[in-house]
Length: 260
Length: 245
Image 1 (cartoon, rainbow over the protein chains, first blue to last red):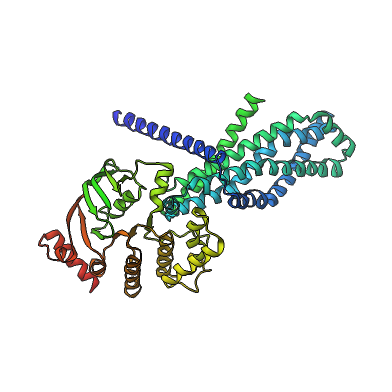
Image 2 (image 1 turned 60 degrees about the horizontal axis):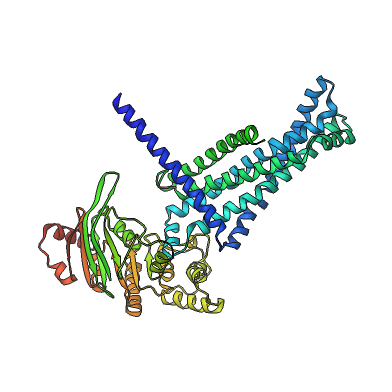
């Protein structure tokens, strides 16, 4: 029994320490992001990787999410004779909630996992040590470009997701199930306010920070917190995706319930 | 000059160093030997400032490693080159870009100057013609050569070699040793070479030190070292020569 308490205590201390290290990691990343110089070409490369190369997956998921919402929304609303409100329902659901969350989850799976794996392999093969020994700051090369790129890309990807989703909803609700374009978009324009759009933007911006922070951290500390070798990298990647996804959902709840 | 004074370090309760003290005068090269897992590479990383000691200190040219941060640490590292066991080349950059990387990032040299310097360095290590190959496209020996070129391109005053010949065939290994010697003749760096291949390395080093049970078990010039009667040293040298034959 005493042993169990001892082990629980040791585990608590260890996880508290890791959380501290993780917090410090984000703090340093933000400090080096604010203080020049910025590795501009690496930043552009990451914008391309996180943002541009995620567009196809965002288009697909956005379109189908909107189409599903169109179906489900229409059948639910028509029970109450409110199918005219399909537009606002799809619009609000996508802009406030589904757009930021699903985009973030997609980017986590597509780009976040790759970031964690890349940095993890660099850690294992001593490339990060090599950077340090050259007198260069690994945060500037590996973390800041990802953080900045994710902060910029996520709101833009979310905007694409929202627009495609709204048209996907119209394709089903309007073209297939007979809600008129005027009703669909007109009601949407009446009920969706700029504040709702900002809410989605704030959320996606913060999700960008979460993805880059967690995935870079997991890769950077691969071998220290996740074990060595290829198994360590694979564990770091898995943990990065799982933790990012969980944090996105938890943070989404807090942002929705407290901030808005 | 590199001074290591009373260095202590433990990992997960296992005491790796129990008071290591060593001194490498300016311009001399020390071979560091010992059984696998005795902490040779860890000692090298202490000297490079990648690991902080629990007790004791590492002093490089009067400046204590691990104490300075920021600009002071970067200035100290500017004078230091490190050849990693696996090369640690950036795998997304080709050989040319790898060698040019420190110059591009840390100097204001123009592109033609950087190009000339990198090509010269690659020629010195016998890698002319392989500039645009990626680390995954070249052999282990070529990776070591490219890594050596990268670590030497800034004309370091201190060079640390972590098992430079491990994993290479005897001919390639010998060529790397000769290359290190040629670079030392050219740059006169102060160096530490972690190695198991003591008989092959000994002609190019000034001193040999053996780590055993967390301390410097024996040290001396190569001729002194090979005449030591200590059973641990004899056993190591005996096994090393068996491996070589």
